[in-house]
Length: 197
Image 1 (cartoon, rainbow, N blue to C red):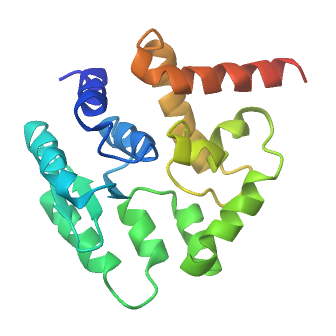
Image 2 (cartoon, rainbow, N blue to C red; image 1 turned 30 degrees about the horizontal axis):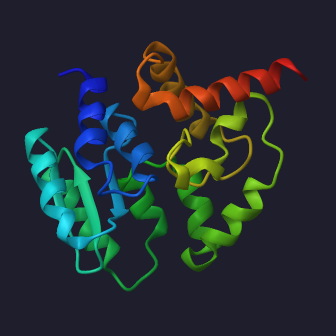
Image 3 (cartoon, helix red, strand yellow; image 1 turned 180 degrees about the horizontal axis):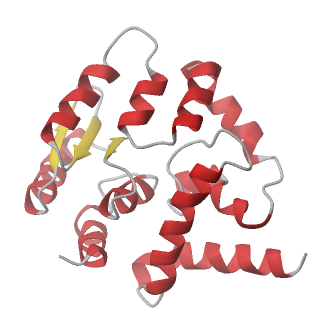
């Protein structure tokens, strides 16, 4: 099945039931750029719709008591994520690796600690991401138009840039489709900023 078709179906069936930030997680998973997602849903009652969509497209899914959903192609990966996410001990690096984040970024977040991730991200977003590294600025994540679904280890993380560029190529190839408009607009902004330097 066409990856764009799966994403369009996700938007039409689940767009209202998921946070905007899930858009980047879902598209990266559909494209094979990350193996799984973990996201908090708006209303726990909506999990039925999410589960139905996952079943239709051969994804495994689970919702925990805190309304976090776990989705992956592989049911054993979903189980591993749930077990790891509910451990009392520090687990940021291992959880990040299971979610498909670059190892350098996982190590950085583990060093910072989960309780400081938001502050680190806010400070990082204020820094100067140069040239194509602008694509790894996580600032647009909550709006659903970031090009990565994790907090990068630095403003020049090549592993994060690789993920962003793969999504960028997919967006450019399919830019006429309205479900990708937010990313098309972001790419245009980045290209204009680079050309104006």
